[in-house]
Image (tube, rainbow, N blue to C red; front, side, top):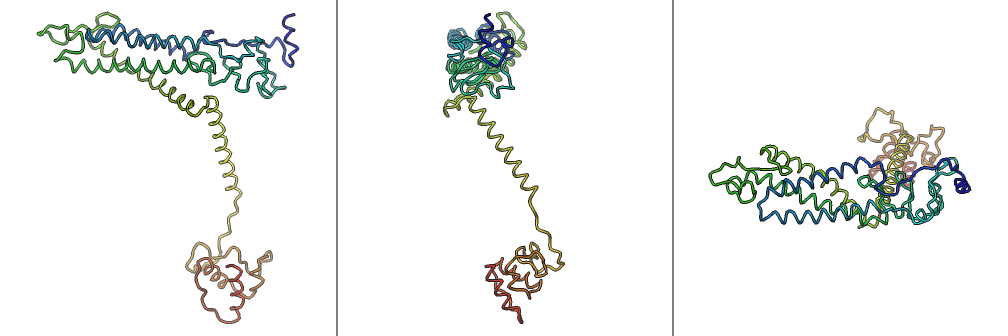
Length: 364
């Protein structure tokens, strides 16, 4: 009996109910979400158990506290952004089941501000997310790194997550690069790396004790760890830095990711339509027939004027040919050349002068 309660909404059967996602905690997790958390955990653990212990003792408190504060802030905003349900208010209040849309009756999911899947009226700025199968208020995009939609309710938390991630990874990657370089430059002075400082004055630098996960390892392994750490950090900074740059641009221009994608799509469609129109015009363009006269009178581009026809042409409706029926082909060519180049006409003999002057007046 409970299923029949929703059948009256219309055009879809209650048996076609589809599940929807509430937030980023819903299973299964996305691949990018797993990769993001894995990289975050690995870089964090390596920082506190491998990078910081290699610094001189007086620097270690700062190296512990600063990234600890940033990472703690990142975890708070990250988990908050994942936990918030960004659904449209009416979707949250009515809690109607999500029904599979009947494309034979509905062209679009949302029509006249009514979602045919969520079965409720939604705000103008709400969009139906295909991945989460729900309408999201002030929809921006679906974030695979958080495995949830980003909308008006969690957009600020999302931006704080990206900013804190960039700051934390930049700090840790910079420390890895510094220690890698210092391994070679601090071998004699021994003022930065604690394993060098712990050595006696007569001990060789290769006797220094470098550790990973607080366990002593050969120097080559420790350097390899620093190199891998930097590569992972660099890739993460490039990825999240680009993402942050895009959203700074969107915020400055007061637009969402969804608006930007639609604008780019329209622009691409306009370019394709313009190219098709241009190709169609070129395909249907009528080119003038080349002149069959073998004589070149100083201009190889136009030996036969297009708008002056000989009197023998049965389809000629040009007034100039009617006013000058006695002109021959060579005279017509001279007229056209002189008119198009703004030169004075050469002197002509006989009864051709009157007709020639008439044609020149018309062409000018």
